[in-house]
Length: 280
Image (cartoon, rainbow, N blue to C red; front, side, top):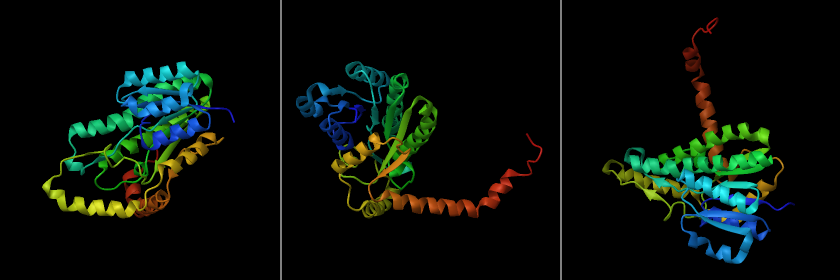
């Protein structure tokens, strides 16, 4: 199989780091970004010319375009673009400040958008490429306490589904990866939290307990590397792919409830339609 060139954001830890290591270990080349470049020193020392570390804050659109150009100039092509940089924000919807909301969207949504836009001219020119958007089970379902995080991932899902249809004509594939709970730093030091309002204090504790029960045993980020390699090597990769054992059951329960509700309220939908015969 031909060697691939990767561009991975958020490679200092978690999924991004494990996927960079897996790609490098099988002989691929990787351009990896991190806010703190020193977190990539060991990979640079081990893999030499096949590894390009890049300091990047994905919220900086100009810097995103420059980093992608630098990676392409170094390796001559881009085969896999992974928008992994992101974090979780915890807070009830009423608790979220404007600054917190904007920061969440700037990283999780706009960062992925800017990197995607930067990469597309190169992918179109070469007539191939695979964009991996790291979403979440929280990109298709939603729970209390992470509303603004859901907003960022639901938006990423929508824009990526449109993107997949737009770029198929150029031989470019798009896959949304939707992990469940994994042993990354998503809910640790990488996350941020709104100041609690007294009205929600009891509910905070309840929701945290529900979350622990829902997540169960976290998945292993190192094991996820084999799944990513399977996706990028597939001739016809899916638009969406769950990572972990929990998401499928969550999605099935959620969508079954949605379908039942839509069916129940279909008479109201038809009432809203009105008698539209002959109306343009």
